[in-house]
Amino acid sequence: MKRLFLILSLFMTLSAFAQHDIRVDLSAPKKRVAARPVGINLFMLMDHDRAEHRARPMWKALRDLGVRSVRFNEGEYGDWYLFTHPDSLYLLTRPDAPLYPYLTDIKSRGIDAALTDIDAEPSHGGYPLNRDGFRPTVDFNDFIDLCRKAGIDDPTIIIPTHPVDRSLAKPFYPTREEMVRLAAGMVRYANRVCGCGFRFWEIGNEHYWENRDDAYDTEWAAECASLVLEMARAMKAEDPTIEIGVNGFTRPWLATMLSYSENGERLADYVDNIVPHQYAKAEYIGSYDRYLGSAEYPLHEVDEVVRFLAETPAARDRKIEVTEASAFMPGKSALHVDNVAWIALANFEHFGYILSSPGVEYAHFWATHWTDDVTYWSALHMDNTIAPMGWAVKLWNDHLDELLWKADLHSTTVRCYASTDRDERRLTLFLVNRSTHAEACRVSLEGYAGGMKYRTYGIRAYEPDDRQFVMQKRRSGKAVEGRFPITLDPLSVTIVEFSEQ
Image (cartoon, rainbow, N blue to C red; front, top):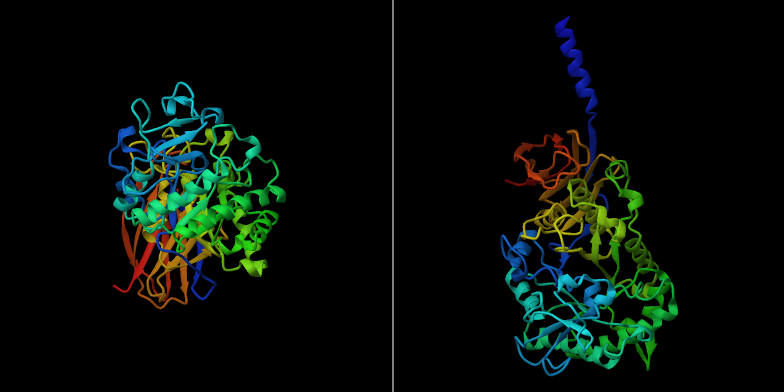
C-alpha cells in the first residue's frame, strides 16, 4: 500500500508539470539581425565615474553589457543639452576642445535641482555642468572617449532641437540658426576633427509629443520637418556618409515629414532611418500575474512604422532604429515598479519582439542609470554592476547570431526564440520560463543540419520580486534525431547553444 501511495504521488507530481512541446522550424520566415543589436541610452547626469562610487568604470560596464551601440544623450535631456566651445555655440575646430555642457532651463522642467547642485538659474538661462561646484557629467568628449574604450562603433547622437516650437521659447533659448550651426558643428567635430566616423545621428527626441497633445497634428509635423530639413542639409554637408534619423510613428506624422519639401529639396532625400520608441503597456504586463497570463502583445509604435513603410513605396528602404525601449511605459505610475526579476524577464521578451520586427536594425534600452537602484529603467546599479533589467541587454548581445526566429510563442508560460549563423549550422535557443515552478519541455528541431551536441547557460531567480539573478549550473547534452528534453529552472532565461564540436 505504501509503495502504491509513492507511485501515485510520483505520478501526480509528474502530471503537475505538463510538458511543453516546442517546435523550432528553421524553414519558417526568419529575420537577419545586426551584430549585438541591443544598445543602451547613456544618461549624462548619472554616468560619469567621478560622480558615483563605481565598482568598475563605465566603459567596462558597457563592455560587459556587450553593446556596440549607445545613444547620447539619454532622450529628453538630449533635446535640452548644449555642447559648447568657450567662444561660441558652434565653433568646434580641434580635438579635445573644452566642450562645456549646458542644460537649458531644466529646473522649470521638473528636474531635481539636487541632481546638479544648482541653487539658482544662471543669467544665460542654462545650467553649466562639469564646473567647480556642479555635478560631474558626461560631456561630448567624455562620450567619444567612452565609445573608444568600450569598443562602441555604432553610437546614435541626438542633435538638440530645443525648443522646436518657437512660440514657447524663452529669450535665452538658442535661435533656429544657432541650432543648425550646432548640428553641423557636432558632426564636424566628431567625424572630421576627431575622426570618429559616427554613423547614426538623430535630430531631436520625440517631436510628436513635444508641446502637443495630438500626435496626429500634421501642421506641427510640417513645422518640425522644416527645421529638420535645414539641420540635415547642414549635417550632411559636413559628412555625407552619416545616416540621419527622424522620430515619429503615426501614419499622418510620418507621411507629412517624408513628403515635406522646401525650395525644391525634399526631406525624404536626407532621411535614412525612422526612429520610434517602444515601451510596453501596463494593461498587458502591468503586474506579475498579468505578465504570467499574457500572450504576445502588440508593439504599438513599431508595428505602426512597419505597416507605414510596407505600404509606402517611396519609404520602403528606410530602416527602423528603436532608440528607446523597455518593458514598461514611463510615467508617474512607473516610479512604483521595482527593478526585479519578473520585470527583467518581460524586458528580455520585449526586446525579442522588437528585434523580430521587419526593418528594425537597433533597439536601445532606456537607460544605463536612473537616480536610484530601484526603478525598473536602470540597466546598471549605481556601482556599475548589472541590475536585473540589464540582463536583457547582455543576453541578447552575448548570444544572438545573424538570423532570428520567434520559434514558439504559443505558451504563456514558456517562450522560445531561435538564432543561427548565416549558414544555419550553429544554433542557439533562448528559452524563457515565466513561472515560479520548473517546467519540463520537449524540443524538436526541424530543418537544422548542424551538430546535435549542446551546452546550456542562463540566469534564474527564486521569487518574482527578487532583486538579483543567480547563474544557472551549466549543463550539456545531445539531441537525438533533432529532439531533446529539457527542464527549465523557475523564473529563468536558459540559453541552449548547439555547435559542430
